[in-house]
Each structure stands twice: as structure tokens, then as C-alpha cells.
Length: 207
Image (tube, rainbow, N blue to C red; front, side, top):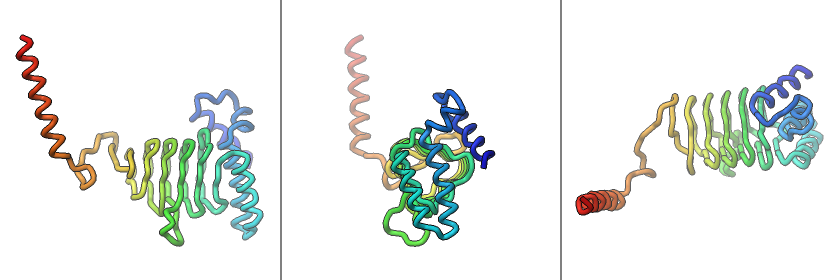
């Protein structure tokens, strides 16, 4: 238990440049308190003491502004930065070395049964206000931009942005592809071409 605590403190110190001491990280970071309370709640939940588990998780939400269902499975070196408004659903599974920022929801769509929440791989960063909804899988080494809404699987080693989220970088390289949502507007293309010709004519008249 003490080793896990020390590991958690190291995680805060490494990922938050504003952290000034181990003492501060342990006592003053809501993400630290939330994950400590979640571990207790999860232990009770796995021993079928679900009322106590929920009571602990609700106290954690009240104290930290971070709501984690006691059944959620969370890996090591998990870091919630700031934390206000973070929600993690019941069937969520989170790998190791994951970072969430404030306002993140790992939730359901209301349309699924059984496995209703996301599965997050290792070394994933989810930006502020992003939503990952439904039983989707997020691969390893993924970055999800602030405000993104993820409704489909995101492969490993990628960056996803937008609403709905789409992959814009893979293995460090920009991804350019055409789909039915992002098809170019032919009218806008004509306007851009006309504007280009106008600019060229202006340059000629100024000579």
C-alpha cells in the first residue's frame, strides 16, 4: 500500500510542474484523494459490500468533485490533473500511465447494456472537457484533445480531435483523409479561387 502511495506521489511530481513537494501532492491534490478513496471503494465492491463502496465513492465525489464508480478498473500511475467535473463510469477500464484533465467524462451513451463504458489503453492523455462515450476502445499512446467527443475506437499511437473526434495524427505524422463529413465544399472552393484571382489583379494594378 505504501509503495502505491509513493508511486502516486511520484506520478504527480513528474506530470504537474506546479507541484512543489511530496507533502503537497499527497494532501492537497484532489486527484490523489479521489484515487485513494476509489481503491478502498473498489475493494469493498469486489467483496460484494456495494452499499459501503458507493458510500465511499459518493463521499469522494463530494470532497473532490471527481466521481469514480467503485466498480471501475484503474491501472497504475493514474493521474487526474485539477479534476473538477471528472466522471468515470461503472464498466470503465483504464490502463497504466493515464492522465485525465478536468471535465473529462468516461461515460455511457444510454444505448448499451453490459459493458457500457470505455476501455482506455496505456499512456493515454485525455484533454480538458473531452468525452469518451460508450464501450469504445482507446489504444495505447493516444492523445485526445480538449473538448473532443469520442464515439468510436481510436487506434494506438494517434491523436484525435473534434466533435465527433477523428484521428489527425498517427505515429507522429499528420493524417489526411476524406470522409463523408469532411468532404470539401465546392462553392467555397470557387469563392477561394475567385478571391485568389482578385488578389492577383490588385497586385497588377498597383504596379
